[in-house]
Image (cartoon, rainbow, N blue to C red):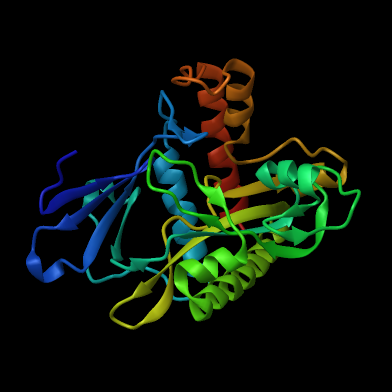
Length: 282
């Protein structure tokens, strides 16, 4: 996509990145959330109608609530035709760590716990069941691999190796603090924030740790309906888990993934919209 006044610089799995052609604004970037969806490190087909708009609205809503430096700036407005799915941000020196916080056990953490009794080297009580609440939220980072390669769960010691002790401790503390706040907000909307992933960078203008990328969206987080969870239903979620489940039934993860069915596409679009309404209506 060509955008007047901007130069395309990067394509991610689900977002496109541009920078202003005006050299005086080279410290800024335009992030456009597409309707693409990815799972198991593959970009899937077809797209999910309205997904980019929903995720942008959810991220912006959360950033308005969270008391922590973030990458948004009002120095430049996004193009009017993309205003509902794009945001202008400050360029950061990003840390290669996905800052995952888990308050409940599910996903890859559940698989690892079944094998080792721990997640990312953090020992957990015996006898936990899928979807159980953990005694306290845990920081289980992952190494952010280049596109096309698989992200890898790592220990906190590995985070120290990657970014140094001071930054590692800041990443952990900020992630746990933001998660705790967000989980409380979600609960008031009848939702459980089971786990989430944050990304941070250094703002060269302020030398501050700064929150970046999408924040607390259903692509980066696992939300459950609280009433259903309390009733013992643990296989429901507002994220793209239904897409992963469908793929697991249809595909052995060899070669290219199959085309998503129209029913899955429609259901996924509805779930994104439903989550946004639940969160932002309170």
